[in-house]
Image (cartoon, rainbow, N blue to C red; front, side, top):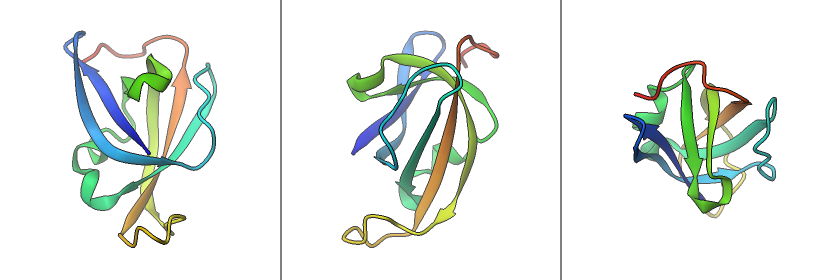
Length: 102
């Protein structure tokens, strides 16, 4: 399990979803997609970022990287021991920022 954050104002890292559960190993490179699950109850702020390019951070595993949150939709929880309504998200990694950090 990981914590997903964004960079705000070019200097402040803010948590937008925790925990996120990976659906595949993360690859932080241009053109990669990061697929994950998040509990719906933990995704309120993340929902507002769908379609936006932001500077993201996934714990210390990734460092800062630019991506667009392509989607965040209801899905079947692949962690049945954690029986909660779940959303599946996809981050599309981009090489350079397409928007300024907010």
